[in-house]
Length: 258
Figure 1 (cartoon, rainbow, N blue to C red):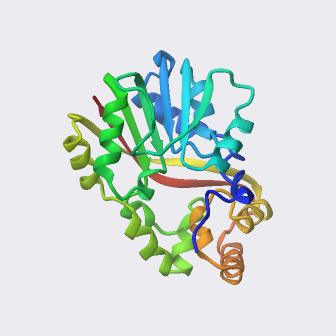
Figure 2: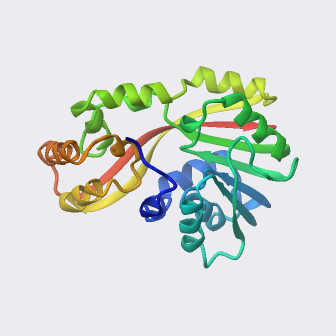
C-alpha cells in the first residue's frame, strides 16, 4: 500500500511537528549552522527541518520536494519565514545552482532513492568547496531495535514481521553510504548514531491517537485499518507508563565535506 505523498489528504502529515532539541543539539555538534549563508533541505516534506535550520541561524534556506502537495504544506508551515523558499524538484535533479550551498540536508530521504550514486553526485554538484552534506536515515540495524516505553517504533516490527522485510529492503547499510559518498567525490566522511526525540506525548491516549492517524509515519501506511487497530491495542498493552511518554527513534547521520 504505502503512503501517497502526492495525495492532498496526506499533505499535512509531515508538517505538524517541530524539530526536537535533541536533533538541534546533535546538528550543532556537526555544523556551525549560525555561520551558514545558504542551506538546502532536499526532501523537505512539510518544512519542519527547513524551519529548524532557519531558527538555528542559517541565513537562507531552500526546500526541495517532489510532491506539490507537500510543498503546499511546507509553504503554509513556514509562511512567517521570509528567508525560506520552496521549489519543486527531486534529489537527483534539484534544479539548484552549482557550487553555491554551504549546507545540504537530506533527512529521511535516501531510503526512497534507488540510485544513491546519482543522489550523492547531485549533492556534490550543488555544494561549494568546503560545503557540508548531512544525510540522516536509518540503517537496517536501526530498524530492528526492540520496542520499549520510548522506542515505540520497535513495536511495529515486533507485531508485524512483514514490516522488517520492508524496512530492511529499502535501507542502506553504513558501508554502502560511506563508499558511495567517496565515489561521488567526498573525502571526509563521519558517521554518528543518535536517538532523536520524535515527540513528547502528554499521555498514552495522545500517543494512540497519533498512531491512529498514521501521523508522519509512512511505514504505518503498509498496514490496513484492521492491522493498525491490532497495533494500537498491542502498544496500549505494552507501554507501561501513561504520562509524559518521550518517544525516541534511533538514527544514523553521515557528515561529508566537499
